[in-house]
Image 1: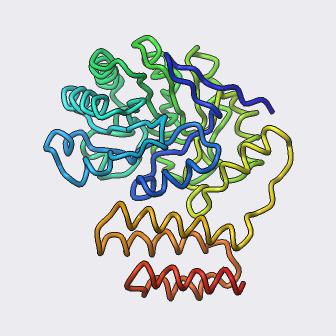
Image 2 (image 1 turned 135 degrees about the horizontal axis):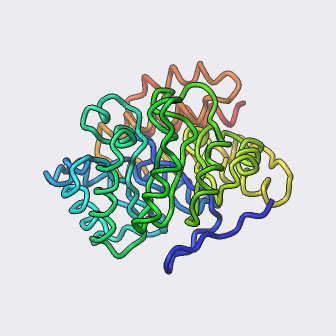
Length: 325
């Protein structure tokens, strides 16, 4: 299946397979590992523009990215048009390749601030935010949406039209409503309606957890590319498998235990250099546990990982596990 590069202004995204923004997961160390595989673009975690305006150190650290991550998108979240504008300008100055506006996060703490998927209920405010951000930056602008608030209030084609009319360069659609959160099946056919409505590139998101689901999603949605989220947690090599399958129709073998250990070790090294103790140990435990999730007898090693007190101890546990499995 052909995967054509997406061109936006002077930016080429090839292949059009993206890493989704995932809170608490897609930080710099994880993104750097994903970029070892054929992924066209990676996204920051969702960043609160209120926190950015307050110069919150934790939030600004979440925006830090490494040269090898380019092209790199920073996703911002908020409901105050001026805060959104100022944050977009700040991240443009820091070197972001693309600014992405979150209009789809379903979490209650986000909805309470009238942000994320709450903007699907107020398209006038959504349009004001898009206009404010677009006129303030020179780099491309994208938005990420859901189908609507619930199954009775689909607005995906309408907000896609608003986005295109106001200069948005790319739109990602998660094929669920806010009320679904992550339950049920993603509706890829509805994403196709967005593709039919606009001329800008459309990226499909939701339930892409394997090479086969990636292909089915592209066929159903007719999208220009795909965005992979939860399916890549603990297995960043999924991107390699997806791209090879779409290009050749062949399923790649799972990495060997030795290869997995090498990837995980590099990930832990990234975490150790990016964070201070004890945050580095906490995050290493979390990611190491995910990396063993699909392994036989993984539950026993995860129990030990969760009790580890240093990254070296986690490395030793993983080495023993993968080289004896």
